[in-house]
Length: 188
Image (cartoon, rainbow, N blue to C red; front, side, top):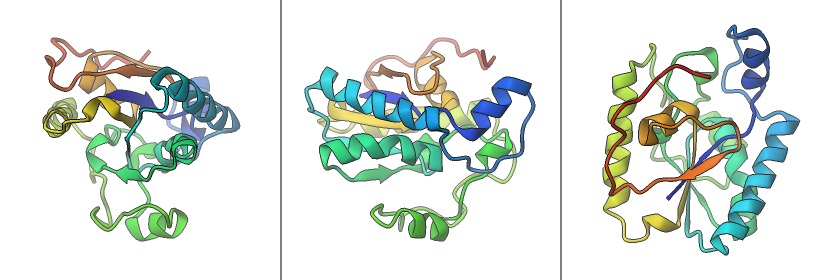
């Protein structure tokens, strides 16, 4: 499968400049973030020959916005999966309630997620790693996991692979392969 980190968000822009939490809840993509999402969709189409059969995205707005160009090009629905959400540690990790998301994203099936689908308190690294293990198991049970793009976040992708990726970057991940031996939660 391919793990794609969402494009630059309003939070990423401000946090990178100040290294302080700007207090933006469930931020949207910046103009650069939208450009990164479009570029990723185009590059993934070229790299995979359009052989993507499933798009999975976190319920955070920035992930759904990043998934949109690829879904549009392929004519595929986006499966919303809270397991692939970001580690809850900053204001940006406060999500949008399901009913509000359903109004903003009427083409997405959100009935299976809780109204408040993000944690109430900071999430320990071990908990994110456990979510990654569960998702890895779920994906490895599918016959066509190799044709799946998962639009997620820095911390979740780190938990899946042990690698840090920048906004709009992706990497391949074999869910049937070994888990990362060591994970460094130090953000670049």
